[in-house]
Image (cartoon, rainbow, N blue to C red; front, side, top):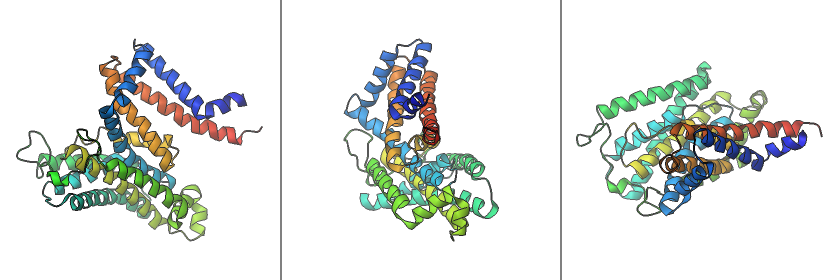
Length: 341
């Protein structure tokens, strides 16, 4: 039994089971698994433009996943990355439409505004948790709806561009666009910013006093309190920084991909990012790998639907199976470590 448990707890065993369940889902949907997987990887990695689009999806997931990682490592459940992403994008879009400055200046200003706006949104939940002991799961979740309603009101009303055919802000001037890495694609330098942020976050978590205190609060809050950690300050700061990272992600989508803001900014990146963070085992560098995997699913899923005729619901089942198996791997691995030999 322990041999099977060890096999399943390893990454190869978990991936094999996830692939088997995904194949079963396609068979149930009446589609050949070979055709389905060929379409998935062909659509995600079949050419330069396909890889670029996969990396665009990876970047959009990576920012909120890193923010969630920071909060979870501090023992706080930030379910509000979707709203923080939206608010960060709204701030960048609203100001960017009227900002005429050199690209370097515009990028710093707009990305900074996105981070500040997301930080304020996350910090609001942190303040309620720190001073009123409000459940952060509920408060961050509810703030998603507030953010969506606020953004909808502003882009339909005061911030709506007179030239726009839909509800969106005025387009950003070209000087406010993030430079592209691959010409004629949507892949901008935002992916480099995200990867650099992942390395920085790992350094902060493992090599700084703040990171040590944050991990102590998450793993042993009573011991942290007895050793002089200011729990209220740490709670507020952790959720504020978590929100700032997600807000920065929203700003990169506006400045690097959409070049305007509307309420379709995110199809649920903030929620999918929770699974990305957990699959990445809350390690910033492994979260990058997990985000790339989910980026393949996001971009390749469209090809599965168009080329292999895999129903959209079956694609969601496949994603769910992979999330379930990889999340279960953590539980089995923990049980394996604690099991007697």
